[in-house]
Length: 337
Image (cartoon, rainbow, N blue to C red; front, side):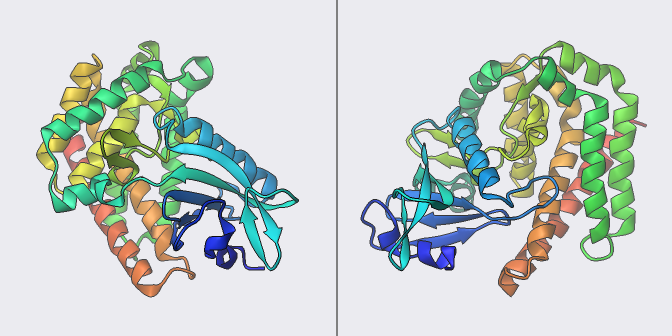
């Protein structure tokens, strides 16, 4: 049985729905009914995540449920089994699970931050609403010795090297060798020259269990601000400096040409969270985050199951993110001279 095809049948769901549509990422299938969104993990192993067994997919869906309830308790509802029923399947039925699925309230697509940005533009008021949501989130997020180590230069260097090892495979196709070396040199120089800064971040309790994927597609600007879809599959990508989390959104704002609002956002967040050192980390972490987005788009660009137009768009996006990373590297290098 083709599970994806079976889940496109409206009869597969516990609530009535007129239709079911499918959105897919490189790690998930998301099925949209009239009122809910349902997510299934793809059985993939990308090195930094492994969903290849039913047990792992069940575990990480439960992690996704628990972690995202920190910011969206009303949106993330339950993890349910998918069981065979007749010639098809039924979500939430009894029986031996074929797989598992995460049930969420469907948020209004037209209020996603990237769509609001394209249609209406963004404002300082919107940035203030996001800051009001994020400051208490980070204040109460878990921390301690186990998490603090992810703010060490050793772990941060490992994360960068893992990124660079994947990006290097794109040299000549999605970025030039000169650009790659420029970005990598800046990252290593910053790590070497700012040893005391990284130590101070740990001492001040700035290393937290963060969101890990804080960009505009993961923010909904409805009657309230919903920040969803955090990293659940690898705590190494979620544990880290609050500055690295916040700078992800700042980078995304830059990518969409909201340069002034990006600066406003980080400056106001730094003031609201009493964190002046955050501004020193700005180019370093924005450069890293641009590389992460470039790497992810590079993966999509090479997936044979993606339609040709999707692969082409992902390749173009990867090139743009790598160019943006180079811009941060050049800006940041001025402060290292």
